[in-house]
Image (cartoon, rainbow, N blue to C red; front, side):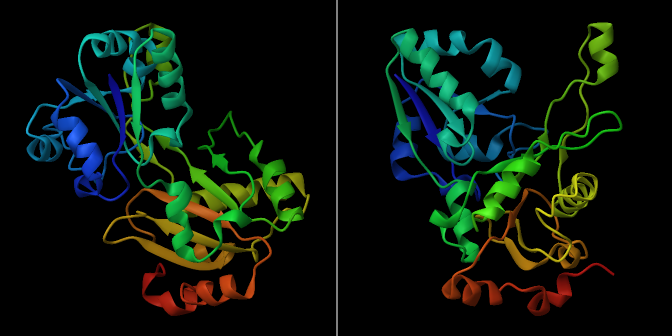
Length: 281
């Protein structure tokens, strides 16, 4: 049996009792390591916090392993119980759906144990979840690559009066261009996009495209470290949020659409005016 288990968003204590029970009966435990494990006690020494809680070793599975060597994990799950741990919810990333498909093709039984994800935890800001349109991803721009396919989706959502959740780029274990040319992989340091960088890129694209999908005065909500004890939620215009220090990752951004009076009341609790101590000097 392959157990795909969501860990939630905060720290190692956010696993469900059902998930913990499953891990304890598994002979092998893997944890995906290509999104972020910043709040899960991961250090240069490995996964000590999780191993202490589970009472057994945990193997880090990077993107290459999951995408290129998944069949090895699945073959293990044919003969014994194997756990694959995922930050957030198992179906918050397409890679995990692919893992289920491959397991089914190999006739490996799969059991999914759900947990909190950014897709529902974002509701903490008071914007109603059923009033969101299509979610978009904002990638890091480079000198030669500045994709803007997210622009039309934001524009469509805004036309319909819907909110837009922007998931911000995470670059973990990305090979450098030089190493790819040489055929020997070396990796860039991990990078996590901030809300400030995302807004700068969004405004740059608006200036180029000129479709009035949003402006620097458009209301947004910046959310940092969702689910953690020190989570941060601040609402304001893009221009105002540019001046806020949101602290360590992970960050995400919501571009606000048409609001209901109850939503507006909730947003008032998070406005920049009430969080002046967080603004940059």
